[in-house]
Image: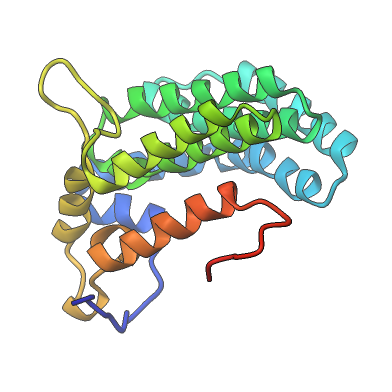
Length: 229
């Protein structure tokens, strides 16, 4: 049976970091110091999504210059910012049908995130981004009509959510699985009525629905007689 919740407030990813403990709260305070750069990285998305690709790419170039010029002592902070930057960069390439570059950027985003997770457990709040990044790679393969690649990326994303493949494998036994992510969210000190904080991950039924819906949105093709709701 699915769990339901009547949250007493709306939580965001940075709330989860803060709730994780003192280390997370300190990290978040430092992260907020760099919010102007983060905002500069993410702002081009609005333009790219509206089809204003030239303007979005110009803004992203400036954001890349800003990111290159900053000196950040905490490696994990820089890695999280790299994850944002390469994700937007990949989308900018996707919008211009530069699919090789788009795919490489998505891989760079995932690699940055994987390294960041080895730095701090509280960054598990971002772990499921690997699911989305694999689906982005599936979209890129779909647009290139590389059907085998598309299904491979979809299969990887599905296996992560089903728990048959780790999100981030590790030789030292510290691999991140869906169970690792769920345990993290379950452990956060919030009122009982606020759980599950992230239903599409913590609740098995909702996770299955969300996963199937996300993958179906990629593999559904126009002209099919049947489209599943």
